[in-house]
Length: 59
Image 1 (cartoon, rainbow, N blue to C red):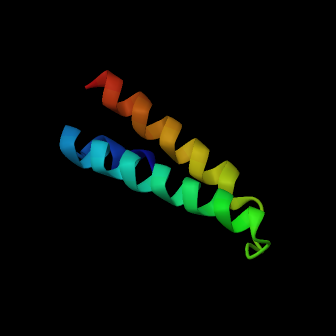
Image 2: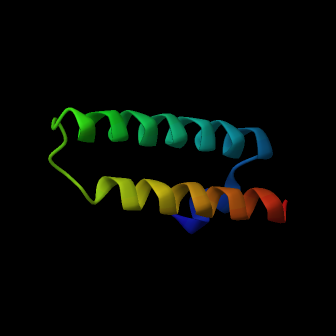
């Protein structure tokens, strides 16, 4: 995962952050509707967003 983020450009990281935030929003709506089975998905998505933001700030 880290090597993938190092090789991405600034615009690719920004688009990845947007996609992950949308996925997290959809996950939260799924929780409210009891449609989600994998509860740990939110944790991994938040960590992915944080990693991408960290690499974005480094660039």
